[in-house]
Image (tube, rainbow, N blue to C red; front, top):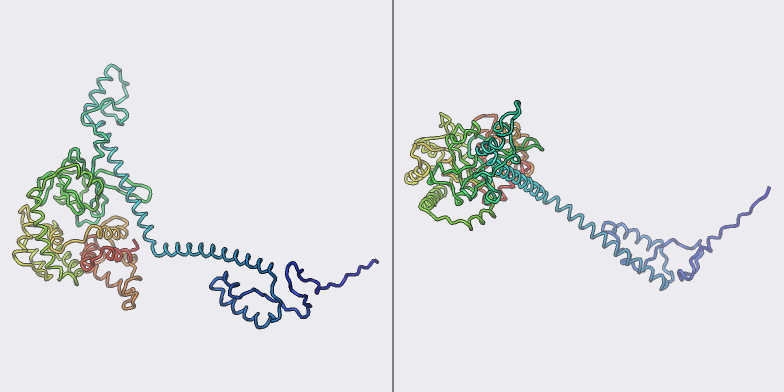
Length: 518
């Protein structure tokens, strides 16, 4: 057997050379493991704040128990290497800190302002919706004039008279044709250039029917012939939509108020303006709308750029009617200022109660009340005005001399209205609740959706979430004509009263957004 002798391992000889360091030889038996940075403070420059206390504690222990006091000074080469290492670590930590700060700032921004992304998304969706409707309007009015023109049949039949038709083929006038199959240019043809001179606006129906109130309507006023048309945008699920004419393109006139009988002009279009139509003139309207003699639309948004451009090109004089309307607004403003003090603290209770009381007085369900009923309602809710102011109010609202007024219009005249910006969020909240688009929402669904966690009184600890929710639902129940359901008008009355005591629009919007998550 061959044996091998393993030489002993001399650990004492394993030391750095003088080139690497100028340490003197220290026997292993007396040496201590140590860390010896030149300065403790500089060695910690690259340590993160959360690590400093922990590292400081252990380095102090090393100073006291491990590092001897008689160590030789490091060489110049070692100092140079350490300085390079320190510089690299500092730069690396600065880069890391910058990236971390940017990421943290981004996260904080997303947490604090998540609404901006939602608003941007909603704005894009709204613009896409308007673009879809505008395209449909152009398609309809560029093609319909040609295809439906009677001259088209006459000319086409003359051209095909010499050709023997197939016995099974229907006459040309009964066939479905497209714009590409037309042969002539008729006098009624509209061009894209003519149709492009238009004013686009959003509007809503003023009605006590919640389903009709939440219809999405987009209108167009054409300056070439002073005509207008209104289309309805309908959404079916997430991916299917339809655009249908609601008011056919034609020249229309005011049907109510000081301007009754006067043709619509460019000056009649602004946010808050009312457009009135006779329901009997539009047989294609839904039955719920045709129940009322008058259809009133409120302009909620308008293309300001197009409006300014068209106003610059047109010249409209100020007539006596405009001055009369300005005086009417001053009378209504004076009455509203008198009642504002009484409404300020009890606006919700008064407006919801007043709306319910009007419905009780309206035995026929027509939506109209006479002078005695209106006076009685004001007296019951301590909203009396002087006889002179009441007569002036009645003269403005009862312009047609029928002896009755729409009590919804009467209520808006004496109490005022929140602006269309605020109302848009009220409608948005209701439409979120009324996903079936029936016009009313059950109390059970409202209880499920209403969230009071961020209510100021809940945050401060003065009330519990359940107490706030119960108080809100109780007020809605008192306002409702049915104990288990709330209509859109009753829902709007609640926020109309709440709006009276809130001066800033954004504060009001946040009050709606927070509990409904919109």
